Image 1 (cartoon, rainbow, N blue to C red):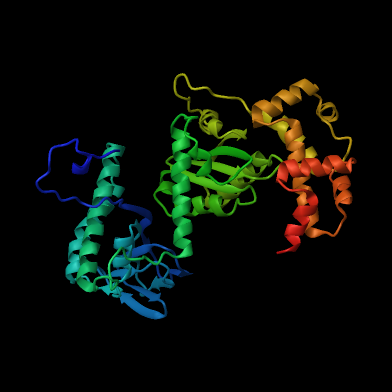
Image 2: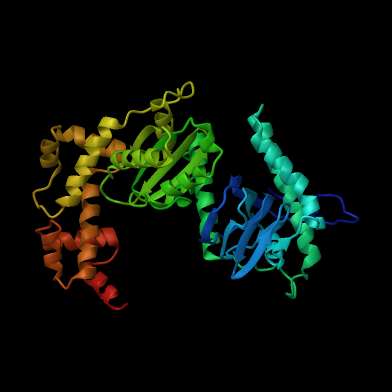
Length: 458
């Protein structure tokens, strides 16, 4: 976007002008739920980087926040600031119903303002709760009703959340002093967990875009906004059980997939009922045995949740441009046809060939006789076929991959051992010491000797 001013001499003189500063306001609602619990219920001590609103609708609740205890009766609201340690329990022998809303506001001014609210407990008769409750009740009603139109439902939810945020903002302005700084923007104290949370949310949005829109090759920033990876895999879980999507099991399952499958790499999960779509980005040289790990996780989740889960495995690729095709493949395996004209690729057989080849290379990189011809013979295919599959599936040649693995291992040996450089070369598969040194410099940018000196200086 370009602007003209009086100084350009290309527009008429402006008599009077006032501008509004540009800004971006983003907020995110997470883990919002309400539930009825029985006698003896409790929630363990925990903390999260989000602002939490907790309203008791029936019964009473006892909550400890940063060592101080609060007792809520029906209608009372508890406000828990980001990163405050807290735990709760039912305060009576009767059932208790509560509503919990978790909110992140990605705006320095609002984040700072809301974070300065020192009051935790707001009684039911307080003006703040009186203003908030109609919107909270309407939000609960919207989420409980059978939607006639998903788009309208999503818009209604957003409107209600914005109204809640507006009331909280006005309350914060009335309770706190302006920022004490001498001007400029207030510096919100963003914690490391909050920054990580926002980074993960941004990653989910990026992957969701790659799933839903055709890849544009002229957009070079795509790779830069994702973690570094050698292989990307896609799978989809389908859960038709409606109560699952209406319970906190939904959040728990997403966390399980994101946090407990890190052996594969970076796992990005997008829930889109009745699906949970996942992209796995790994920097390992060898192609991971993703199908086996995902299938094992599926069985564990079915046993834990007590619901049937269908699995669609889209495949594995080294090219970001094929992520959408893998996503469509995973849906096709679940019986959902792709869009007309979409190219649905078959990766199953090719992936196994490349996976086996990379696993052999990863394990036997020190074998000086390891070559394309020898590897093709072991895999039962021709050298030309294997060469073509390396190039088409990974975008790089067999030699490139083998060199990358060997140099990576050479770097590890020079860091972890006192072996002479020629010994390192021999261990990673190079009998010609001069050739190893030239290849190392071409790949790393410095000779093995200079690399070792630079490592020793730290």
